[in-house]
Structure formats: structure tokens, C-alpha cells
Image 1 (cartoon, rainbow, N blue to C red):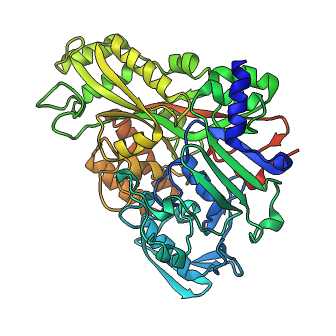
Image 2 (cartoon, one colour):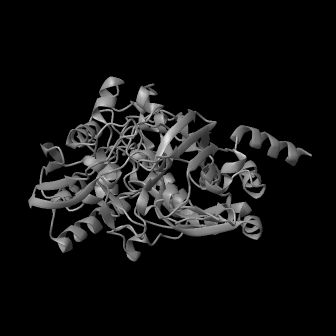
Image 3 (cartoon, rainbow, N blue to C red):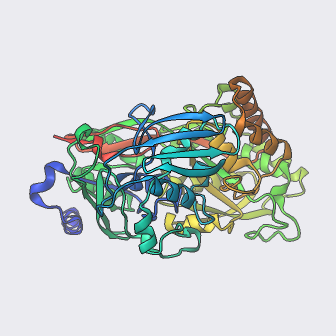
Length: 524
């Protein structure tokens, strides 16, 4: 009886029109879209939702090759200037024409102080209109990954943003409310129909989309529903209340495979732990007057106490790839040697802590963790806390929903935290610059919440940004990753293996960026 009541409640909440099932994609995952502002929050599922409505100049095809989107072609004018020819006849959802003014506005908006997308526009010195359908982007120096950066820079309508006081991105970290956080106006395949935070977000097909003739899917409506509880999410799929689950619980995969369909693949996302290494003392620890994480021996001890193979087996049910580096195998700069992880060694961890001046249970701090963002995130944190305890470390787990978690860590209000980092450019610079470079202008250190800092690393990253000799550039990437690993700048855990679960009549294109692309989805 309880299951019937659950199914009935979900049916009422989702409000599925009976006649639309064949072309309505009803999908769920554990947390809600964080914001609808396309430059406010650099978080995977939020970017995916933006991509339904907004489009970049350059996009990826199903194999992550670069293809035209709002730009039909492009060419370098010099080592530091690229010219983009814009698609003609494109309309925004409100009927306004798409022009070069919108491109100039949007790239400058992504460069604004409140933007969380600086990693995608870093190195851009100027963007200028040549005519209504031509723009030039000038960079500070040669930029070997500019085109791949631009795949996540979404174009907004300048006039719409000005009319709605949305010329700058929402300041998500301070939980600012803006018009652009709840309303949209893009050029993409789908238009926002309704938005109810933490309940349901609905999109409908854009009949005027410039790319409709090349659309391979048959989805005309999208209903997204966040379902936090693992059991409820699985029940919704197996009962037919939803068609697709982005993050099926690992413990339910065998049952789902028997009744529905699961498609699996490696994600380009690395799960890791960050540590505040710069504050004079930790904000969330009883240890005063010193910062234990500033001592490399403490960081090494925490690293060696973690058994990632045990996490893979007991927590991830085999769906993870333990790693000793901060980039996944799909990313340029990864090597098998760098990814090798030393065997866990609790006794050595205890010895390192003792050498650093911490006896049993003297090292204490809080570990912040999301509970609805990454696969089994809270369970991973629980396992890590237990492993640390065996080495004589007292860590207090502080788990919270993603909507609370991201503003907290992005405000540097943390001592230790679990995070996941994907690489949409497929180039290690995106990771090195955001996570390992010291805090600076633009994207430098923009997600380096533990304030890891090394002058040689900074110098190498600055070289990597502009180096066009591929061998020299790759060698510099390897050197940064080697130095960072030796210093335990972060503690890598594993690369995610992402299973997607769906009804048997749903066909999707599985992607390493964990992004469901509805205009590629067919429902039989």
C-alpha cells in the first residue's frame, strides 16, 4: 500500500499529460538545478539545464568534436585574434534577432566579477563587433584551448538582460535573487515553460529553433523533478513515473538492469578532498594558533589513511576508478604513472601525524560534504571519516544539500571539503588553472578553496596557458601534476563511473560530461 501511495503522490507532483508521453521526457536526479542564470554557477547539471535554452558559439558533437553552433565558421586572424562568423536568421525565444551585440555582451558578462564561468573566458582580452554577424575575440597571448573553452559560454540577449536588470550574473555565492536566476531567453532547442524551485522545471520545444531540421530526437517536452531519496528515485523509474534517472543508486543497479535499462561509461570528473592550507588556524577545529593542514606530513597522513579500493567495493559497488592524480583519463595531460596511487598505510599515517605533533585523536576538524551532488557523496565522506578515525583523526562530517553546500565552500567557509571536478575542455589546464594556481585575477585559483600555493606551479601554469609547442606544453602539465601530488595539494579519490538508468523505450547518447542532451533522445 505504501508503494502505491508513493507512486500516486509522484504522479500528482509531475502532472504528466496523458497524450504527451511519447514525446515527453520525464527525468530526475537527486538535486535541483541551482540557477537558470547561464553564467552564475559552474556546476555540471546546472550547465546541462542551461544548454537546453542557451547556446554557445562553438559546440561538441556526440564524440566531442568541435562543431558550429551560433557561429558557423571561425579562423585565426593572428596568434592572438580569432574571427567568428555568426549564424544568420537566428531568433531568441522572445523573437529578438541574434546579432554580434549579443555575443559581445555575453562574453563580457561571463568575465564579470560575479561570474562563475571565468575558466571559460580566461585569457580573453577583448571581444569586438566587426559587423552584425562577425565578431573577433582577442586573447592576452596564444590560447591553444580557446575553442573548447567557448563550448560552455552561453549567449544571452543583450536587450532582454538590460530590460530585466540582469546585465551582470547572479551572485550565487551570496544567494542573490535576480530575474535571470528564474527566467530565461535563449536561442536553443527548448524554451522554459515553468520553474518551481526544488519541485519541477518544465521546458517545451522551440518551434523556431534554427537546428530543428537536424534534430535526431523526438522529445518535445522536458519535465525535470529533483528526487532526493535514493529509494524514491528508483521507485519512480521502475513504476514508470519518470523515464530517466541521471544518478541511479549504485546499490539498485542490478535490480534496475532487470526491469529497465542502464547505460554506463567513464566520466571526466575526479572526486577529491580539499584542505584549507593557508588560514592561520582552521575555522572548524579545536586546534588553535596553528593550521595542521599547512604541514605536508599531515596532508600525507590523511591521504595514506584512505583506502580507495575499499570505497570502490563497499560504497561505489565497483563504479569508480581510484586515482592518484587530479585529472581523468579522457583529459589531455593524464598519464597512467601519474594516476598510480600509493597503497593505504594506516600505520605510516599514524607515524606521520606523531612526527607532526599530533597524538591519537588530537587532530580534529569538520569535513563538509554535499549529500545530493556526486554519486554516493555522503557515503564516500562517511567512509573517509571512518578511515581517518583508524589513524587517530577525529573528523566531524557536515553533510548538506548542494544548494547550501556550494555557496558555503565558494565563500571559503570550510576547513576540509569533498568536491568533484570535470573538465569540459578535455585539457588539464582547466583543472590546473582553477584548482592549483594561487588565487589571482580571472579564473586563476577560482575553485582553489583550500588556497594551495606554489610559485613554481603558478609559473608553469602561466606557461601552459600560452604554450603552442605541444611537447613542451604537455611536459609542463606533467610537471605541475607531479609537484602537486608530492605536496598533496588535494587528495584525489576516484574518477566517477556514471551509470544512467532509463525505461526500456528510452534511447540516449551517454556522455563523458554527464550531460543529458534531450534533442538527441528518442522515446519509442
